[in-house]
Image (cartoon, rainbow, N blue to C red; front, side, top):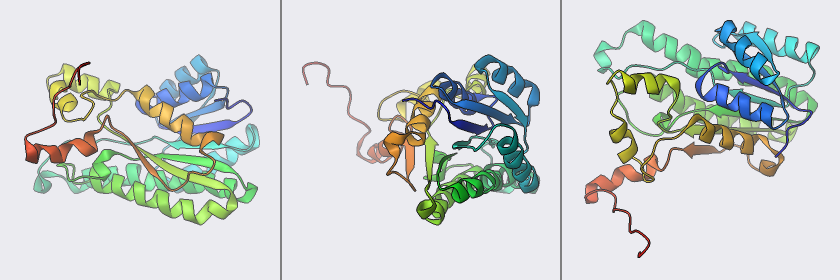
Length: 262
């Protein structure tokens, strides 16, 4: 799978899933633009992978429009966009979640994804080619004590479908990847601080493991590649089977491993 000669923009590309996508796309030949609010970290990663760094607050539509125009003027047409910029939310009771917290999650995770997809996608549609991969979440598929984050990610999944239909005849494919519990530095820090129990996260999935950022990057690279040329409008969960496992609790839980003897 080669992306030689293609320009890829990763929002939220300085850390976590975004950084894994940036590294993998660059390793496979893409010219990668690492965009992030944290420009110092973006510059460090860009230097590591031979890419370009760009300061970007995805919550601003004007900033996204300016970034799209600047990148196209300086580097050329953008072929791939990965909308990985996002903020997390603490699991709180609904009445304890402040209006400011809700607004920030919606501004970055939902509106920010829309801003980036539309800013870059409009250029792609005019050229007649391009691939956009939004980063949603399994939280967008199930009820969770994440009363701002889950609805925002559900909106990302649906806007992905809408944009896939909007730009399909213009040669632009738009797909979502929904990560499960992914061992990013943020989750690793929460585990180290005793705030999350890794065994609970692992045992909740069919495969009995957590996802790595590289697992997400592999899915992103596939959806960005020519191998996925007839795939658009999908939401691809990369969750180690978390979505399929939960309902088995009603029947006593998942069956244990059979071993080699079946």
